[in-house]
Length: 177
Length: 178
Image (cartoon, rainbow over all chains, first blue to last red; front, side, top):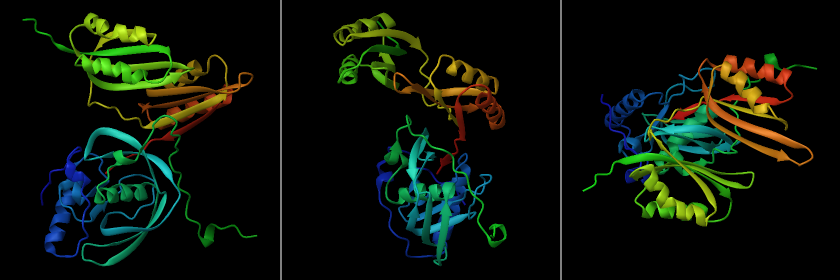
């Protein structure tokens, strides 16, 4: 395992579009372990994308489980991820390992349905919302050569509220007439 | 040969707003080999206002001499302060508070007093007067650091809601780092 060097804006390589992963082998999984270690080495990082360390393949890692009181899927390795459905729009504050000492407000879909593969090539589908959905969209932007800087909205007048997560409705808590 | 040290200055300019002020002003600064840092320009009640960090090789008086002609031509009043140019040390806010209500004197003083006592360090404050001249409303947005945590701020705002005729709202700012 190794901590990899993170490309920092304005490095032109961050604008490069990444290619799909086709080979799901040990070399891929070793790289993912290094990418993971690199993400954990940064302060407060909840995600990382392969192009941030100069590997231009469609691989992202997201793990927002350290944040209290939000729904999430834990540690996620998403390979060749595609948003297949989205709903809502929300502005929130983002920073990036590749853009030190700056944060800005960015609009993202509030809920997404996502298809991806895991590190063994198995297909999977996730439904996510709020902070986790934001993290995935932030990382997926890197695969397209985009940074949150490319999506900034003005600070002034950008009223936004932190999302309040409603508990999932189940049969037991639906009131019956 | 005279050896000049580069210094950071804060330029404050105020005057009648009009198109092209920033371009003319920064053109003169660029021609005088100035480097610009962080800036905040906004139109307040029809007035042009800007606070601008300028790195300049020389003393305040030379910088003033450089910009006074363009300020005169644009009818801007100018003030220059020598400052410490603390770049690359952004403090990130963790809370955003909005306050609005019928406009009257004292809203800012009352709100910021209780928030300061509850540990709020204000990083950014913006306010507008909206509504009509007969029924003006005051809207203020504050971003800051909750040095004593969020709960004391919520309690402070609950007191404001109860005792002062304003509506307040607090939302935590969760920064995503990816």
